[in-house]
Length: 255
Image 1 (cartoon, rainbow, N blue to C red):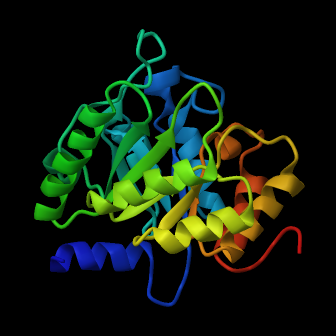
Image 2: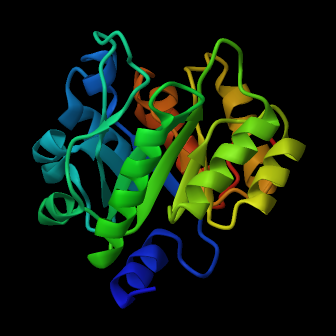
């Protein structure tokens, strides 16, 4: 591991065990200016104030969020893209390079792989190339892993996807909730890099959302990587602050 890569990973996940609170905000490429992202800069400002550690955006959106990044807020640049206007929206294409992300000030590179769909092999190739480029520059790579299909992914399929992403060089892996704390603990145990739990679709019940996060932390995840569950709430701040306190160890919310 290069010194730069080691330093950046230590900042994102300090040795003392502080967990990472990441918020992906790249949805407007795939879904358009959805609720919560009409004003990306305002959403970023609210999340930074609430205690988010890492904001993940597309390369063009960096100019909007950069003015709101605090001294201890990290920037992730997401390089995978597709739109819901496409006949193959699950086929992600790499639309940038690690060097470009570094020039934009990134602390982390983000790539998405959708498993179980046509084009999976090309997405895995994109992940491998991104890892090679990023590691040469000392930049860690987050792989956002999804298992797509006509039915909900099973716990074993999510476990397979997470392990594949790690084995192809990703330094962190984001996964969907596999259905139970026990299944999540098994996934964490068999994935040799830190696992971040994705937030999924918006849950109206904040108590239930906080309880899921608490149980996931107990299962051993390295942090949370939630988007719509946060920025689509109005106002954004109170729930995001409760999540930040819980992820960072204040244990706010259900006990």
